[in-house]
Image 1: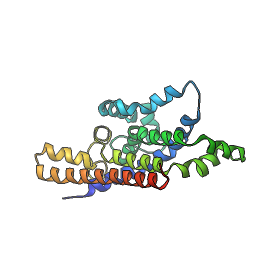
Image 2 (image 1 turned 180 degrees about the vertical axis):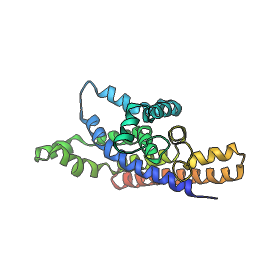
Image 3 (image 1 turned 90 degrees about the vertical axis):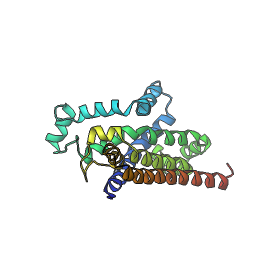
Length: 223
C-alpha cells in the first residue's frame, strides 16, 4: 500500500490553501466593506464553483489550460509551464474550485466584526491595510481558521476537477480521491476501503478541530 497519493493530496491542499488565503483575503475584505452595485455580481461569481458540477468546471478548465487555447499556449511558450496533466495545473484548478470555501468564511468574519472597532482604527489614523491586518484579523481568528481548514479539507477531497485536469499520473497528479476511484474500477475493494477509511478519518478530525476551537473561543469571550 502506497501513501504517495495522500502525500500528493496534502501537498496540493496546503499549496491551494496558502495561495487562496493570499487571494481571498483582500477580496473578502473588499466584499465585506463595499456598497457597490457590483457586489452581488462578484459574490455570485465567487460562489459559482459551489453550484457548478465539477465536470462542467473541469471541462472548461481543461479547455482553457490546453496548449491549443490562448491561455495554455501562453503559459507553455512563455514560462515553459504545462497546465494540463501536471501538478501545477492541479494547483491552479484547485484554486478555482475551492475559492468560495476560502472567501465566504472570511467575508462572514469581516461582516460580523463590531463596526466601532474598525471606525476607531480609522479615527486613530490607521490605513485600511493596517486596519485589516492589525485590527480585523486578530478579532476573527475562528473565521480565519475555518476558512483555511475547510479549504484544505475540501481540496483533499476533490475528484472530478482534478481527474479531468490532471488525469492519473503516479507521483504527479494521482491524488487520493483518484486512487480510490481506480481501486474501485479494478475491483480492489480492500485497498479502496482502507484509503476511504483514512479519508473519512482525516475529514472528521479536521472538522472536529474547527468546531472544538470555535467552541473554546466562544466560551472564552462569552459568545
